[in-house]
Image (cartoon, helix red, strand yellow):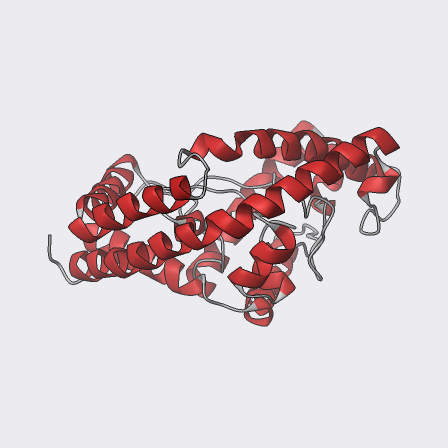
Length: 291
């Protein structure tokens, strides 16, 4: 968390579907890396309608591209492609008040217009190994074309960087971390959190993260089983998957998460706001050809 929530937008080499493929190698361009990161950061401000319009255009492009190769692609928007807070249309203050960090509180929440399971994965499992390889190669090519045409995805990025580009990105982030303003903001964040009786270490929320993972894994297994059986998993809820004892424990975890987030998150937001100002300055300087 020390670099701020905004960096969750920069998920390098993230593949939003199991049908993906890698990007071709290219030469490192420091200014280009900075401009790409800036564009990704800017797209993180898109609202829900803008984000879904992006995926509609991408899916239309993928359907046409795959059809040109004699293949079928079913439009799909991954459930994690849209930030939960953006999908819910609430401020960060409202989100913390209602959902805490969103770890244990939104496990069965499904943003409108997205799906829990990629229908193309089901189709892939029914293909021969040779046809599957051909399909995946074509889809990877179509995705590269779509990204070149429409740019990075809102809220999540699909940058595939070479080792040189990754090194340059890391240099930018290290320079931001060394900036005196960020150092001061980090110290204030620590002081603020500890003054409220909490540990400032990232491991503070580890128990919540692990608990959420257990429930999420079980829930997603149930969703996948439902889809494979030909049932729509969009209406599936935690109460359909877990028993009363598990649900009672989850309720206690959710109450703990919300109570903690209400106190801790304002400390984090102050840091995030300072970090973003400095981060943008560094990206602008490198993007303009500076150091």
